[in-house]
Image (cartoon, rainbow, N blue to C red; front, side, top):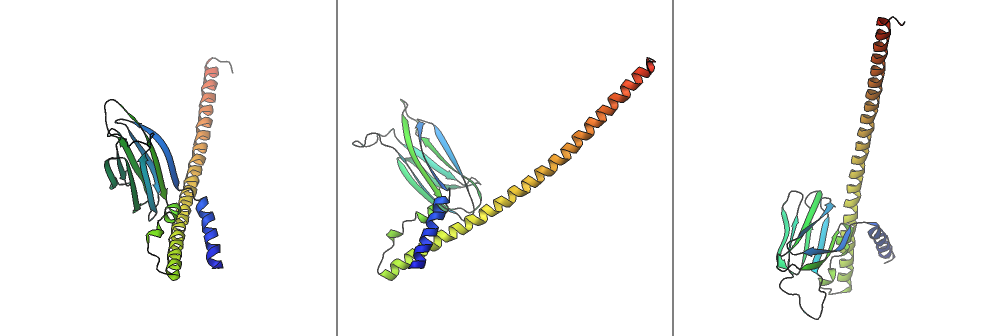
Length: 216
């Protein structure tokens, strides 16, 4: 149990340090669309939800308050789609690394209305930790321990994938920096050569001019 407790503390710290939760609230006018993108690496788990904020909780939302949501992969494959809803949820495991898009649009309506949308998108460690394991039946203490271990394993696996992803990104950035520095060095030498050449041509031209005028 001490080992399990230590693991939970370590994973909690790593989870808090992982910036993979996107939460926002924005407004949409009738017929308007807003798209949100998130850079997600392969095999990362993502979950999210969205809903129209009801300014008057005592009354249901009118028919004019509807939205259409669509989630697309980097290759523009549809991962989630909902038409004329007030709320929705999505979850998927990324099949490739890249920018994933969620586009939410307000249904066109006259007169124009303004909707407030609440949107939450979690990926990586946060999404693994947010899984609702309580829905799995707990028949005994052993079953509860099994669920805890499975949840820990799922979170550790997500952290492991993110560490490899960050390491690959770091290698790409270092290679880009080396390439940029090399190009800048060549550009500096080229600029110096051009300046010296121009200076030499100017000196030759002035010398020829003064010789023709018999000034030297």
